[in-house]
Image (cartoon, rainbow over all chains, first blue to last red; front, side, top):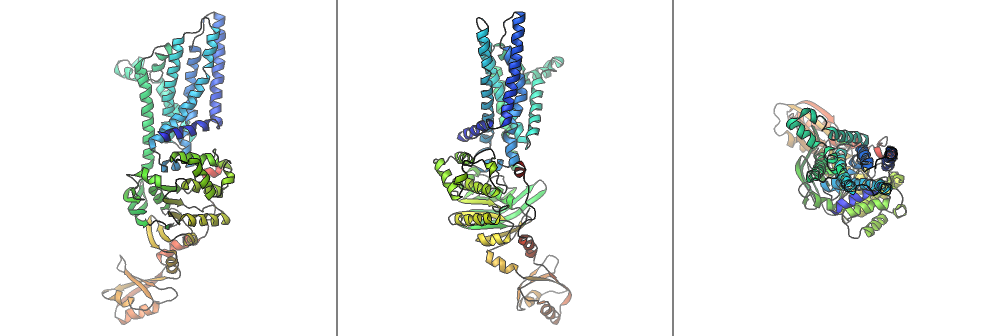
Length: 243
Length: 317
């Protein structure tokens, strides 16, 4: 446990000394701010009260692209620099390494998400008597669960590569597939369609948490994806040893 | 401290090391001498728990490297050949990080202590990216000393250093080797001779020979080997040749030929031929061949490798 925290701390601190992390944060917050402003103006012109969707919707989409950039470095860079050899010959278990990396990335993403809390704060000031607090809470709960799963996938993919760019695109690919896998479901129908829409990353967010509903199934889904990805990441490290 | 029995490692179809057996005592500096690609790094990586062997067994400080990997890793200090470090950390932060991973109680104190041992106190707050190769080597060594390990494994500790730095590192290793077991690899014969108590020569994944540096030197200089081929009956030939003064060994080889090792400084071929003919052996062929050690020796005595290897890290800096 202690090793996980030691590794996570190092990763978390490192984000604040790497340009990539700042650029991702800058990109997400800038685009988010812009869309927020547009949504707000539209709402004012057309005379309806803006809700949390003005923030959550674009933020989730941006995360799909931002997370691979945040996680691509985590293990791939250790492999490129050879420092993985130090970690694997220190008395650290393989899963502690993977979970520590995940925790570092997850905490950074949470920090980023925490900054976006400024938007609902503004909304609450603008809209009288304030926006619906339910979807706000569940929406952010959803974001946290989603981040955990996205970062875990990013870490697992990063373990496969010793090249950050390769890790970035592979992670992006996996995330987009998981995000869109539910789309053919309607056409397919029956069991196959059901399975696909269950696997779909976005369904578990947009159908419930986004709308203010907490369904245990969704919580379990995201937590299982996180656990499975971290397990696979550990397996990758283990297999690399045996190669 | 280190016991290795029948260690073999395959990378896919390529066999990196084959059936290595050796051991190292407490307080001994054991040198691993061999040309590049001989399997030195592979062996060291197995010993420090980085990867498991394909077959065979290795115990370090009494623990099995596969089944008790964590125990082994707690007791071994390892410096890989490329000395991988985090360029974006300061020397102090890096050492503190490694100390924390090892759960050292007085981590700060230990870091200060090892910085002193490798004489890097003044650069403690500098970023690793800005260090010279020699300093990086010392930081790598400091990291390996943090937990006061019983066994130190150093892969090519002097590669890429300038002569003054090489001398420093060698002195440091000798100092450290007084109370610990040190396993170091090198492809430089003179280095092994200067630093090590005992040397293993390894080539193409096999141990070629094992001796003290002094003995090795004596064996390597000028020894001559002659292969003789005899038709028909060979009974008694071995004894006969053995009795010639100056012959150190006679061994039959797989083809039915005999290999005669001759002490340095003499050419005994005429004597050997005369003895064989007068004893009615039908001598077909006699040729002088280099001692198999000599080929390796030649590789090893090329003091410095030609161009320094460019690694990823170097490019990045």
